[in-house]
Image 1 (cartoon, helix red, strand yellow):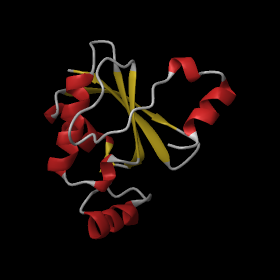
Image 2 (cartoon, rainbow, N blue to C red):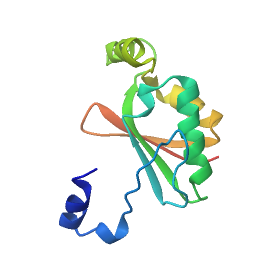
Image 3 (cartoon, one colour):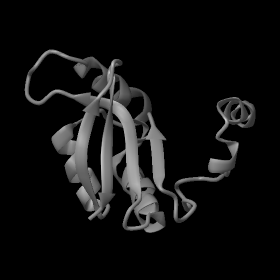
Length: 131
């Protein structure tokens, strides 16, 4: 977070971004256009994930979007990054998820998955909005 102000100034967007410290387990700043969780959800068990997602949902407006940047596992037995799921379970108690599993988790938090956008990396962007 210490490099963020300089980077934002460098891109000329410092007047469009607010940096606010806190814990997503307690609350999320209300009213933003977008909320970004990058490699966060896979670190936590279902209950902790639901706490974070419900706090995001409570802060969101009807037009806000939640962007979750995570590895999205392929369905079934398709080759991919399944070993990453075992690592997350063993190290953090978390899990990697398929798109279907993300949709189910989001629904339990009062959110609706709108799409999954692939990137040029192993991560995808899971987009959600208020249900």
